[in-house]
Image 1 (cartoon, rainbow, N blue to C red):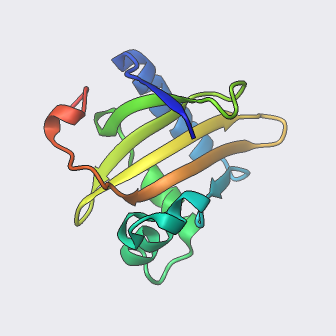
Image 2: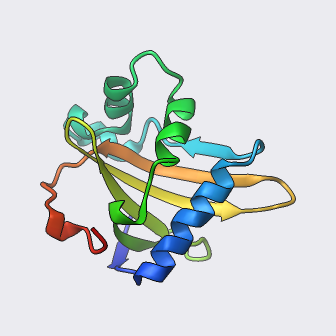
Image 3: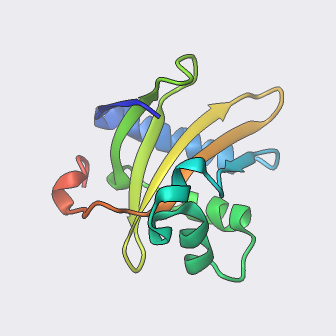
Length: 140
């Protein structure tokens, strides 16, 4: 996927996190998780969604575990946002990172559909292949 990175202002990041929390609070929220991705076939297994989720939440349903973990995202976890050039009409993807035994890179899109429920698309939830420091987080 080609992407163009940008850092949103803090007020927009707060709104994104609020939108995510609103979506997750609804019974009809749909969590779409790309557990197996084509891009992962040539990647070190440690940096794949499937490995990370299985390692962090070994005895849990991945979607239930992700829903719980996404509820704890805060604006301080925000890194940047990207436009998905493959789907230009879709909203931005937002990239966060949370510290577990190491940093986990989280890329999501939140869609509030109201009529059909809410949708949270989790493209990435894997250990970060790049080292992260406090300076990577604009609102820490």
